[in-house]
Length: 574
Image 1 (cartoon, rainbow, N blue to C red):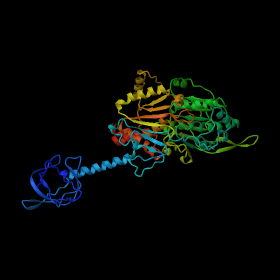
Image 2 (cartoon, rainbow, N blue to C red):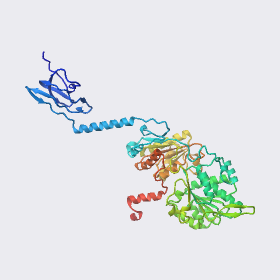
Image 3 (cartoon, one colour):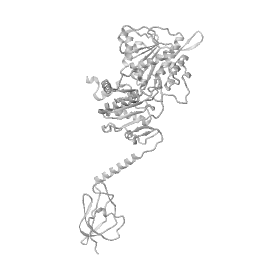
Image 4 (cartoon, rainbow, N blue to C red):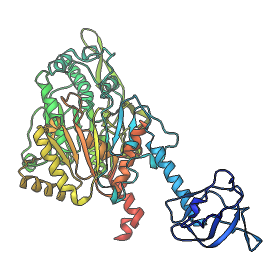
C-alpha cells in the first residue's frame, strides 16, 4: 500500500537526530518562503542520509542554521541529483554574534558579587555599587556610575557616597592625649577646657610644636578639622609668655599677631573664637573688616591696644596706607585659607601689605635671661609666617618666596587632606537644567519639615538672587549665611555644581565639622556635561580610596589658562 502524499509538510519536520529506519519517504519539492520552507510539487522518492546538522528556528526571519546540509541526494526520473548547499548569510552571522555577546554581557552584569563589607557607593543601578575593600581587575571609565552622565538621557540617575568611616580629623580612640598633655600655658589649658574641648584633633597636635618653635609652618588639613585653634592657641601661648617676660610694651594700634582671611565671613568666625578665649585670658583681639563704616574708620581711626588683629586683605591695605596700623610689635603673620590668599586674585594685595609691613622673616628663638632663672623666650627675631589651608598651596616660591625662604617652611598635613569626608553622606543627582527649580523647592521643603538648616551654593550672583526670590514666593524663608551660622548648617546643597574640585571640597566642608552635633549631608545637582568632569574625579577618589586628583585652589589662573587655550591670550583679543 503506497503512502499518501504528505500535505503541509514544512522543513522543520525534516529534523532528524538518528538515521531513518525506512530508506525512503514521500516528499515534495522544497522552496523557501518568508516563514520557513513549504513543500510543494509532485511526489518523489528520497534516499535519506543521516543529517550533517540540526536546523533550529530563530527569532530572526527564516532559520538559524548551525551548519549546512550536504550529502543529501534525490532521484528524479531515475537520475540522482544532489540537494543545494544551504549556508548562513554573513549579515545574519553578525547579528547572531552580536546577540550572543549581548546575552553574555547581560549575564555577566546580572551576577551580583556578594560583599560582607559596608556599602561605600550606592547607585540607582545596583551593579555599579561599591563596597569597602572592593578592587577592580580592569578599572576604566565604564566602571564609573557617572560615566554616561554627559548624555541628557542619563537624567534621573543618581548615586550616593555613603557614610562609611569616622571623622579622620579626630585622633584614634586608643589615643589618650588631652589638651592638658600639650606644651601650652596653664591658663590656656584651663581656657580650652572651660570651652568644652577635651581632646585635640590630629592637626592641632601636629601643628602645635612646629609653631611654638618659631618655624615657618604650612598647616594643611581638611575643612572643619579645628585649624583655627591649631594656630590660635600657640600664638596666644607665645603672646602671653612675652607679656610675662616684659619683652613687649603695650602700645596703641601695634598688633603682635596679624591674621588675614580672604572673606569677611571667615574673619568674623575667627574673631568669634578669639573672643571666646578672651573671656579666660589676658589679651585683646581686634577685627577690621570691610562693609559699612569702613570710610568712617579710615577718617576717624580708633586708637586702642590690640594684641591680635584680624582683617581681610583689602581693608588692611587701606589702614596701612593711612598709617593707622604700626608694625613695631609684629611677631606673627597668619594666612588663613592661604591657598586662596596666595592665588592670582589676592597675591597683588598681599604683596602690597607685606611690603608696607617691611617684614623680614627669620626663624629661631632667642634666649632671654630673667631675674630668677634663664628661660626660653618665645620672642621671634623677625616675623614668623603661618600658612593655614584646606588644600596644599602651589607655587610658593613665586607667591611668597620674596619674603621667606620656601625651604624653611615646615609642612604639617593630615591623612584626610584632599580626600572625601568618609563620615558625611554625599548624594549626586543627574537632572535636566529645566527641572532644577522644581527639585530645589522639593529639597528645601523637606529640610523645613526635618528642621535642618541648609546652605545652598550657586556659581554666580544672579542665580542666588533668583533662588532667593523663588524660595520666598513659595513661603520658604532664606537669609544670608555668615560666619556665625556655619556651625548650625546640617545640609549643603549645590544648586550649581562647582566647576573646580577645590570648590567642592570647601563647600562640602561646611558640614561634618569637629564639634558639630550632626555630621550633616551634601546634595549636588549635576545638570551640564562640563560638570561631569569634576564628578568623575570625585567618584574615582571614592572608589580607589585615594586623594582627589589635581586639587588646585588657584581658580583665577585655571580660568585664564582655559580661556587662553580656547581663544588665545586676552591681550591678543583686546
